[in-house]
Amino acid sequence: MLTIVITAYREETTVGRAIEAFVTQPLPADWELLVICADEATGAVAADAAARHPGIRCLRDRGEGKPAALNLAFKEATGEILILSDGDVYVGSGAVKLLLEPFADPKVGIVSGRPMSLSPRDTMLGYWSHLLVEAGAHRQRELRAARGEFSESSGYLYAFRHSLVNAIPEDSLAEDGLISHRVWDQGFRTAYAPQALVYVKYPTTYSDWTKQKIRSMGGYAQNYVQACRGMRSFRREALDGTAAALRYARNLKELWWTLLLFAARLHVWLRVWWDVKLRKKPFATLWQRVNSTK
Image (tube, rainbow, N blue to C red; front, side):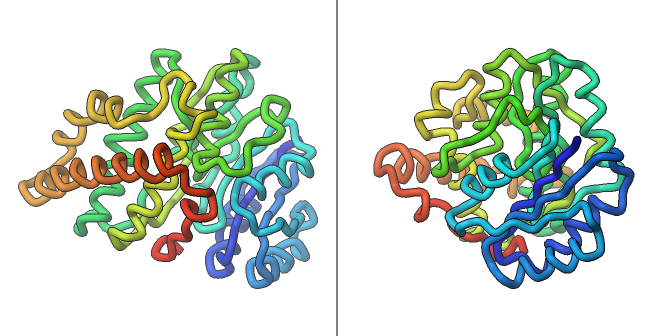
């Protein structure tokens, strides 16, 4: 049994595409798709999809954030393998099959898909998105997978064995990293499926960019993730990614944008230290909606 989980909030304009991208591709004979949402508009779109596809269920969460929505999904899911994705992205053709193939190895506990930026490369923030997903995350996942090392899965698209994680703290800012660590710590390997694509629109304003990055990077400053091996940090980022980032630029303009990205990442890590580690701001304050990605 396979359970696909899509979490969404106020994403009525995009969740329909997210659902259709899954149900229109080859799926195992025994599957279900859970759409977890808190608002009426998103729920209405999911209910319409459920009327057309019997394998879809729409569940209402309490509106207390993505980790709470995922805990509801973990409780309701019947699948041995869970695929997690979001309501404002959509997967590529054949992504499900490609994600499931590594589980033929019983030692594999979690598999990451590969985000692809839909943002234009000829703008600074669009260029940043391409650099971070291609020269950053994709490069690191390929290297670490080849060496049999730990790597975090992408929250936009990943799959794991349901028996390994049944609940997460509801104030978790980086649930994808937390789940990845919990699977690894139980002795299972992390795998990467680089052809399992998921298409993502990234922020178009610096304000939204910082909101998104403080949220995702801030999760690695929380106590239950900080002690994990291979944890993301500014030092690890600088050591592992600086040379690759500089090589990614095609011209002087992109090189200048790369240097600005270094400064922006330092700004975010300082904000993480201040807001998450020192001031310990509550989850509701740190988890802010990023409107320009919808």
